[in-house]
Image (cartoon, rainbow, N blue to C red; front, side, top):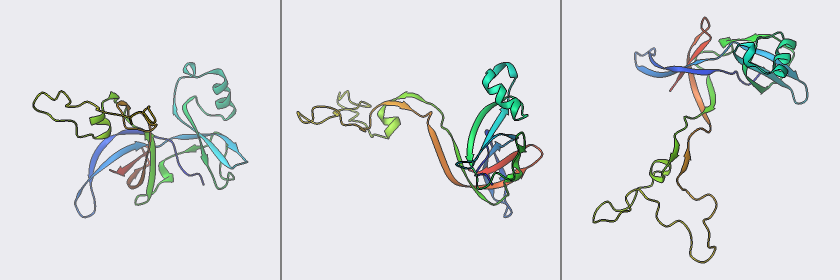
Length: 187
């Protein structure tokens, strides 16, 4: 078995659970994923997701897809597998891999927010706000005196916020929609 599938976020909604409580959920389209490669050492399955026009795909990638008897795909990712015996090139994997009630880890890219100051990026409280301090949202002193005479690596400073790989663990699968290849994940 492989350790995951590729997908994309469709949006958010809410559903009612068995007790009648409203539960916020995220809708994820997880498939169809195509098996485009099998590796032996270490044992891995290469999956592709999100069909595109052949004209938008490079020729080397197109050759890989033709060899696997799969359409042109936007995303390719390797997944660890315990055994490759159950997989064939060109095979489709759909949302039936998941069951309602099980827990999954979601890995994705966070929303990019551009260049941000320290108050938004690191939750600094800021300087005095009155009496002409002119230090409301500024960074203030940022390094030691003569030794080491430089800003130490890793200091919280203004800069680029977001657009980075984020993993959210132990999200519960609330529903699986096999017809639309969607799963609803709590949160």
